[in-house]
Amino acid sequence: MADLLSLSLILFFYFLLSSSQDLFLFVHAESNNNLTVTPINYDLYHSSGSLMHEIKALVHRHPNKFSMETVKAGNKGYGAEIAVVTYCKGKRDSPEKPKLRILLSFGQHGRELITSELALRILSILSEEKLLPGMDQASLNSILDKVVIKVVPMENLNGRKLVEAGDLCERRNGRGVDLNRNWSVDWGKKEKDYDPYEENPGTAPFSEPESQIMRKLAVSFEPHIWVNVHSGMEALFMPYDHKNTTPEGLPLQRMKLLLEEVKQLHCQKRCVIGSGGGSVGLVDFYLNLMRGLIHISY
Ligand SMILES: [Zn+2]
Image 1 (cartoon, rainbow, N blue to C red):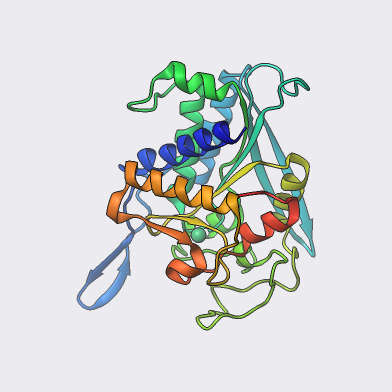
Image 2: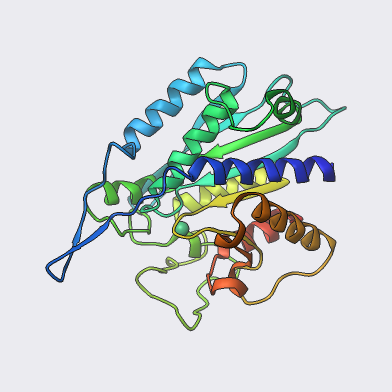
């Protein structure tokens, strides 16, 4: 299982990196000393509606590989929904040969449009409508036979809609909570660079419907691998992200080696690797929580 796990992880980082090379663009422009904001270029990005429409159509064209559900939750007059696509070839749960379970989530922050484009690209490759450049399809298929992948293309649809309405720098959900701070590990803890606007953790851990849906998904699916995809810098992070240390033990050593290998293969000096907290002072409570919640070994 360990080898398969490593192979799959390499495969998915490869997806992420190779798929994103031609998609990086930014939305700021400056003129006459006034910061102006360039509207979203819909020649480059889908709208949330058209992206989800394409994903639905793709799933529909490949019923032997994909299924899709939309999970809803809400409280205090605020509702959210998250679409989850499941990729699984052949028998879903063969007791003799349990499959490796992989969870890929995108679009946790509303403004990070490119991540959801990447979700669509990955699903297109899984469907075989698009090919992974430089990858032997037979080798890819032999790996894909052994995995179940759940893809969350757009975790924060409400936040994304605010961005599409013109609030281009919004990262929080539809009522101003940062979903990356709404989980229960060290909830509400304020680091030195804490920004109360950007990092509003909500009124309590899991106060937000989006977080509740993701928690439920994690608990029921119990992924062996989880990749939470963000944009804004080229980096491959591993735990911990909310403090400047890394967990100890063999799984972490193996993960670090794996990240080194992916870095060498695909992003050389451009890419930062290490714990998010230790490498760049990033705080990502989400990964840590997932570890505590379902005992993922990284
Ligand atoms: Zn982000």
